[in-house]
Image 1 (tube, rainbow, N blue to C red):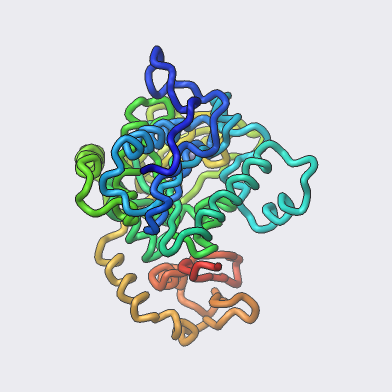
Image 2: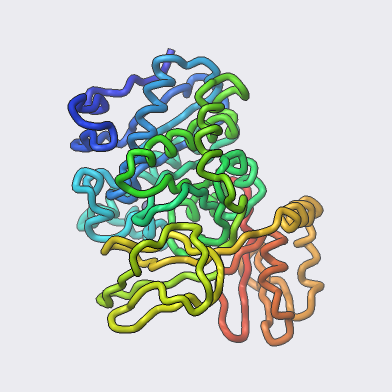
Length: 401
Ligand SMILES: [Zn+2]
């Protein structure tokens, strides 16, 4: 028997199309099934951004299907809603971005005081506690899956920190995988759980108000339930149907891309994207893409544009990505299995960080220009980079208990 049935607020208004169904008085727990089975745990979050409801609707569908028919279920799926009042208001956030607030400093502050929390800080505290409890309660494997959508159009894609455990969780999803966003964005929920040793990947299902974004969010959840082991392999027809659906949008696109550039949006400076850009559209160096106040913004290099911003809230104007060849992915997996990071300090200009465990300090004057690329292959990420030094830390960590 399922652990919990979706409650009354989960029953949508039949007169409305599903993607416009009510998000009023949204419950935090959209569904919680299979907890008694003792298997792996997948924690899914929809609507961390309030104007991105397709994740919530997609999760409702999957929960409903699993409650009606738990066949193949061998672990726990916990489905949570994100920024609830912002979802009801169809607004990205009220006071600050809930997906940029997951820093250890902010969480320490949020835990230290009960009064005068912002709306988003209260949501942050609640979500962190619930996800943390589910991770701690998991008898073995636990992972986080975070559902989003974009203001511009284009095919769906996966966002992930390039760890081997994230690859195992997410490479089954037939969609481009975007690596390296975490080096550009601080305080994301995914980054926080990765730091705690929990595999955590995101999925961008398409344009915010496109009903198809709900279908694609649902599809990505089905596939990830199987790749996490929450569903037995091959047990559900929904997983095969999900692969078929996402295969249609992935056709002709690179399997893996890495972020090369982020265009920041500055507070108080109106950012205007030129109309018509969609994710994965080719741009050439020098193309005029947007304006920042009265300044023209051109592409600093050729590549594929990602997440062009067509809404007023948000700090990222667009990204430029480029494909990563599968050869390099295989090489990097091999280097990591061999634990080549243990001899990284043999490289010229590289030494172990005196304070940060597992980290390396790179003297950029002495090290080769491609030091960061080598550390990416070895499974490290950039932490701090100045003219003289670069600090890299390992992406993969053991789960802290
Ligand atoms: Zn989002």
